[in-house]
Image (cartoon, rainbow, N blue to C red; front, side, top):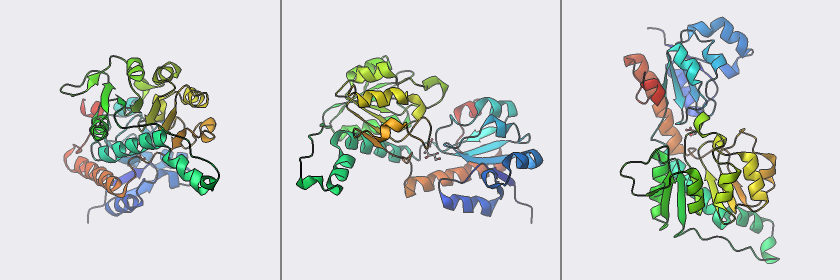
Length: 320
Ligand code: 8YV
């Protein structure tokens, strides 16, 4: 039988079953499992034409540069900010990813965080478990239905959140690099104007250099003391120290966060605050969606090896 293609897996996958499926179909080495990963790369790096990683792990230039024969990277996730674009373009390696299949579950989680931060679901749960119910009243919360929802980043996930919002009779406005043709919603010319206009600001923009710290103290002040922030995109889009300070001082009302600047370490001040809901980067983390993402990781790799073209390729990779 012909030997199976060698694949360098950067680390363990978010779905354990996928580790097994990759090992079944390919001759896989997991870099993070090697006794001395640096030495492994130096000795064997030249043997790998294919690599697999996740959006959260990414692929640093240091690894790409140690893989001189690299042709294709199959990444688990829709974000590609952690994959070193310059190193991959220099290498001429192409990159597959998993857009589309996670839109529903990420949008669902954005709505869950929005409802929780406004209505205090997690805080109420803590209140009941502490036994506080028989001793005191749970504070009043903030209405969601009928309010203004601001979406920063009107792509596949942002527009899915907008559809969800219609069920809550919310008025939707958005800001994006450019207005989206045929979008039925109000376009605000800047993030600052969007923050001023809305009651709830949901971040669904791509991470990376172009969006770094765009949600800063000024934007949070524009959102205001009645306003809530939800982030299911990338922690890097928000100045997390400024956010912690705005939450602490009541300059915004609350927040729901699935992503952080330095995962898995949320800013220490956030952990002590009652007006923020924290989740460990799990918006896409349902059985159904992780399975669909795993299938696309496998399909992209298999299709690239067979035809030289993955099923879904990141824009700067496909544009070459
Ligand atoms: C995943 C993500 O949780 O798709 C993305 O960009 O960040 C998430 O869906 C991540 O890829 C898992 O590592």
